[in-house]
Image 1 (cartoon, rainbow, N blue to C red):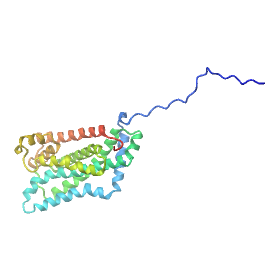
Image 2 (image 1 turned 120 degrees about the vertical axis):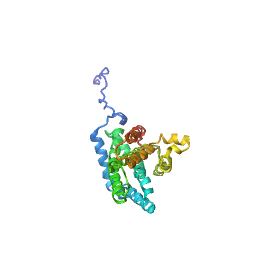
Image 3 (image 1 turned 90 degrees about the vertical axis):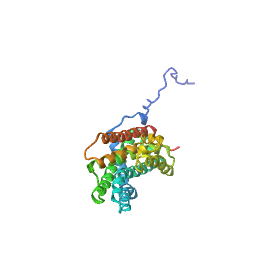
Image 4 (image 1 turned 180 degrees about the vertical axis):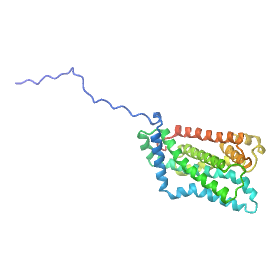
Length: 274
């Protein structure tokens, strides 16, 4: 009777070499090509959404034109408020569009698929900011040109400074929209954030009454809101022919707030809604 072939029990079992675990999205370094690719994808999607394009480009111009003819019998009132609203309207529309667009990416699963690829949160946020920032430049250019050259908005300073502040305001609205989208579970909730985030700033920014004439607590609160400095910067252009120190300060504060909120948006970005 034959015997079974001896087996080597002392041989170490062989296992396939484990694959390296992918780096978490939060730890990936930002990459300019990935950021540009994200921005290109967002712009391509916007190109096929005419209603969103109309909301971002046409509605602010229509609102400014409506305001001009509401005060048709008193053009000075339009001169006093038109420059401020030139920054407020773009901020509002960019906040609304950005918050809904980002939330839609997450609820549809697109965001989860993107973050499973070599795409970090910083790339995603920067790509969205770049794409909507380019739209904001077009939006602000149209609104500024309409106000100054067609609606006869009387501005002492350079219209280019008005455009600069309008772009910064629109970028701030984009940053706020990206940030609050992390806390919304549906598109309806994203819309609900608009009065909660923007309405207090609108009431306290100095559009309706000078901020130093408000109740002291409200005046102090307005000093902490970025829209107040956006309105102040617009008023500096409205009243002064040269660039003032106050204008530089206000523009810098709006820019800093936008960058800060973008950073918070990257930190709070989640793949899915809860």
